[in-house]
Length: 241
Image (tube, rainbow, N blue to C red; front, side, top):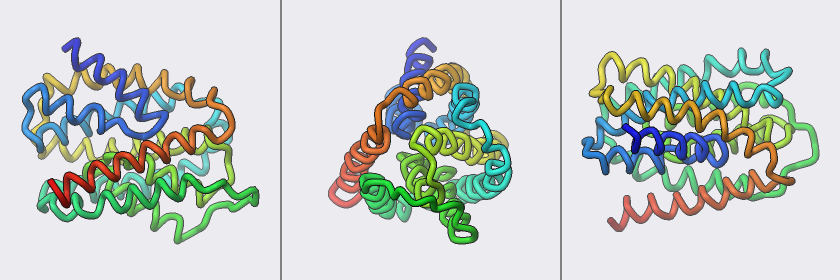
């Protein structure tokens, strides 16, 4: 329990800062002896508490974004539900082959200098991109937050810390709906989920405090570098492993 609690804290911080919680927590669950599918669904259920902690820790960044979250939240929730359904009824191989390319491209988009022009919300196209990304978040989600960060960066001209806070909330909604499906129909290991969730809650609350102190666009570039590294690793495992 202590090991999973510590893993959750570390993964929660990593999730809210550079969107890579599953890269920390999923291998840890495998190391504790859980089968891959059980580890995946248990991780998703616990990840809900990262979103709760991040929302509590990101109140300054989320100020004034209530209407935007109400508009985009249902799209993220529907995407998460779709991803959860796909995980339970389809083989994982297709997503394993696609994921490295998605993550790599999103990371390179983040590495571009952000436009100074106010973009505003990109209507239907933005919602379609959000829906597609949250399908991946609900399905597995490794570096899914980086994809979501890239989508939000193309939709809004906000500073990075605000985009990161919005990303954490929308990712949390996608995970919450997926987690509900897994709790009802998936092989969740609750003995592992509870201490991991407690750690995620604490780590999710701490992470935004770190993110808002990062200078300039360093948050964006840090996420981009981490995303490229994950894309290379997943690509190697999927195509050469």
